[in-house]
Length: 479
Ligand code: GTP
Image (cartoon, rainbow, N blue to C red; front, side, top):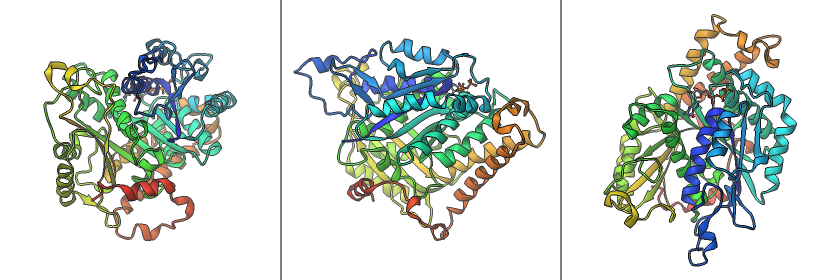
């Protein structure tokens, strides 16, 4: 049985993205917005082939409750989520700061709030873990640039990685766009990057530059908003978790998916891509008459389908995992892989495998005869890719460049002066800067042939488990 995963959504961005994620999951599992499921009461239709247990608790009266914790320092975003889904979330899993003022974009306010409320927050987490039988780990959703998602998010990452250190921790982390709305964003981002590097096992990175550009293409709406960007993120999250929720013989745990992608603990930042965004995933998405696995796999490597903007032109790839849903032919997949193997750069020490998994489409989504405009759904393919590559260097370099610019002048540091961590000096900033530089160095040296020779592979440096290794061995689609 797949292990349970607890989702922690923090701050405005975390809760808004979480809202779209749960909306998508409910759709795919036939669950209504109040947690009820009419199919479960109908013995004729009660033939589930999905596994709701990793993400939902189910009570005796057939009500599904997300294994989700909603944390924020002001009530607006959380209220929006709970109003949209009345009686869906467990009210004991919602925690909002009593002064309801938010962190005012200050990482240190968010961090210190976590320190002061550690017992209450850990109590909520522990209680949720008590509702599991085979707890696998956490996925945390947040922005790295505001105050709550970044500061409280950082504090919680430290806490959970210390307290539940054998459990898997993944993050869905939204980086800011170049047009910084808040002057201290570079500080918040750098301080959070350290915790992503040190306290998470896998971080899936998004950035608002790419998300906003891609949204304007997908939705053809001049007024691109977070409602759009968040649907792109939730589409990706739904695809990553597809094999956990619709299990087959492999990739049915977080650790088995991510151990395919993370060769060493340092290299755990992953770049997502997705195409096409059809109405299965986004409102008013395009419906396709037909495309093939060949088209989709090649398109996933097109920069315009990436959810992270990168200036690295010819990246070096360490690992690649794609998940396809729809009607696929093995021959199309093999042709696409062969083409890519001759086209893209792999690190000299990595294998040139492209892991392709064919996931299952939910039977609760509209079926071909119900599809809009007469287009059948069965004939097209959706693809999601997670890549571990040097493209991520752009994100790290942008983070340190914007930080260096303002830190060198001592600009806007007043925001942090009252933070407990900054009472005596600014050493924390220097240490975080060093961690970011180490990340840049790790990804750069990983392009070299002797990268693995330089690493002392201790037991604790290897992630994953026996099940994950079996999974990889069984992957018939690896070429
Ligand atoms: P405080 O407001 O300081 O309490 O922190 P917070 O974590 O709630 O802030 P927020 O989540 O608003 O983080 C600010 C950053 O996140 C900025 O870079 C915003 O552009 C971005 N952001 C905010 N909401 C969203 C969202 O719903 N989607 C996306 N993609 N980005 C968001």
